[in-house]
Length: 193
Image (cartoon, rainbow, N blue to C red; front, top):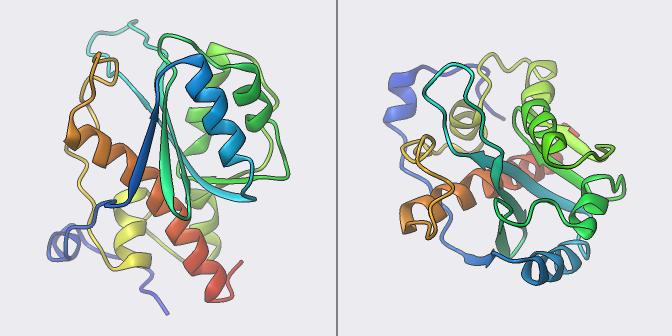
């Protein structure tokens, strides 16, 4: 069904893959709450966060962006100014909605620094993959193994607190959440979940 390991060279030979669908950017409390209301209609979503990188020891930045993918769109919640609203906090604690991501422990710790919540419904593909015999984890490796596609990580260390996110940033952020949803659905279709 899928290979258990892959080399960097093999990944680099794969076609580049990025999200091309509908994006919804929510940048204030009202937009974020409306987005959460729409997202809560689904019981399975892709999930990721982005934080402005730090380059000095001891520096810290809060999560600036939460990406949530549903089948027909990706929501980009710009929380750097308004933090975690009560509906968003409730979503993060909602065990009915499966939130699939990669390396979620770090995301949950960082989000809890913004506002405390009881994380429920989170499924980490980095934890599932080894139980399936997969040797390489992480977004780039897993998307290559499970989707036969290469994703770009060029925007990973860009400034996620910019007043206006660039098109490459938007595509990168959306892709990261969307691939999590895509990979989970594939694994389910193949009978692994």
